[in-house]
Length: 308
Image (cartoon, rainbow, N blue to C red; front, side, top):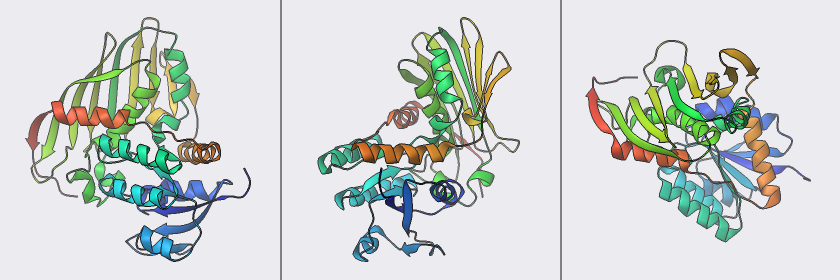
């Protein structure tokens, strides 16, 4: 591909430090040349308060990876695209589907790459599950996606504010896998959403969807104090498939079929570099649309106040 793509990381919070920075450190395709971070500078790279000041500095940047909360991502992505930069978006790609559509159109007009990432689709068991299910008739699906917000999002108040998506921030990972492995369309049918009395986004959800003639049920919980449970079980006319640990482990009838270490973000950056080289984009808002449908159809229940 030639010289490395000069990249700026925008928003250096927990996910950026845990996943993006290590993946970029191991990447031959990208060179991290700058960061945009309101909470202070990174010790090893030039850091700016906003994209405008980064561009005004004269530093040469080819692409940005946006890891901010979704509520502000649309404006930042537009600014980057208008400046001639390729853009990679952490999930969920924006606060609304219409924002994603606007960014896709703008990137196309400017001849820039836009990549809406869904990191859970890069888990080792996802593509083997997709291939296995393509040859079988699906009878029912059950999703159990439970984790502790205090462990995985400590002090991140934005996630329970309006636009933060609440329990759908992790739950959308399950939806991204489902929309990848199930052949055909997934449709939201009903939802029960539990809102803490002091927040604007749900902390738990029970949703029902349909896939062809099959029922798909999902249980999302952000107050689960035990070992995280990120499982998808698919009952077919022949056998039962189970993806566990967020898709990194695959079982057929409880017999281990595949297990592999986490390479999700390395694969995302590899894909981003391939898209830039080819002059293409990869944009998919389907999981975000399902979340929007759950909010639209959801029956709201209020629970006790939650404090981090």
